[in-house]
Amino acid sequence: MNDTASILIVDDNINLTTTMVFILKRKGYIVTSAKDGVEAIKKIKEQD
Image (cartoon, rainbow, N blue to C red; front, side, top):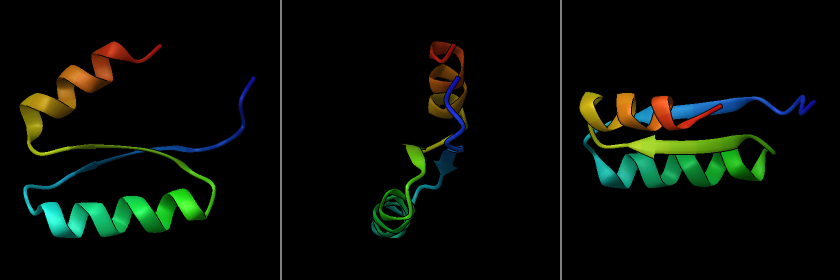
């Protein structure tokens, strides 16, 4: 079992999203991003 937290960032501001993804990945989190709610739901459904 993987104890690393998984974070989904949903934001339409690509610059902010890129920065947050970079920071959180450096902290050791598993990070996924989506540009809107529709894309976020699709990515959540793809996860185990």
